[in-house]
Image (cartoon, rainbow, N blue to C red; front, side, top):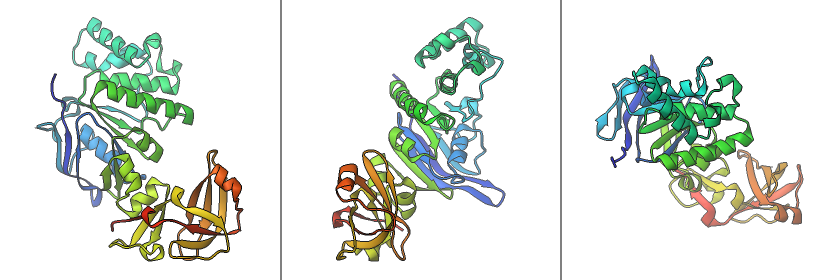
Length: 338
């Protein structure tokens, strides 16, 4: 069995005139990994994906797949395939012919390409719908057909541009489970662009958090969540309070620290404030089922939050406008890089 390739980005750069969209990023994605490029709109994640695919010209740097530099190769010669956000299915072709289309363009005979298309439709549980047109399918079904079409060329890397964004929340969760299961079965690398922190956490072996065309952090989901590399990562990934190190009385070289919202202890105030606590005023209370999220305003700081187990909140509830004291233990303080 052939060794599957790593993919490496070396000083990869994209300029649009004077605008620097992607700024000399370096990244290695091990073979067979599920990698999510995560960040806000305009951070460079989709441009990076399109440069890997060959749909966007590289300004500087290289895209390496295994031992081959694919930077200047056309999309069809790269060993990658891209699934677009819109799915881009041909409305006049049935599912089988949509999936088989790229093989038709390569001159593969009708019987062979349709047989291969039906095999892939079966793999994504769409064989019973093989003769339907895209307009006769639900959003989730269209996504499966688009996946089969992307996979028919046996790519070594599958590139996905916000593939779940058009689906309703329930179907989105179901389809991300199917995506991860499919990637595990195929054993190839998936590179998936998303702006959803939950999606990235659920799917990825590696999360690459981007900001302003640069990589802020590239690590496993647990490391990104528990040890964010910067204040930007801590804020964007969610579930953290970012405080000046002096306020948290933290030791370390960083200017800011992060404290997970679920590690904050909350009690009604006023109460004595010690070295690991601060006082504030409840801004909001949101019941989330198993937990309650409490927003707190603290003078001179950005809004803070505490995530409290339902039973603990019920035993000692607080309401908007009520004084509260937030406390934490020193071991839950993570010093952030600059």
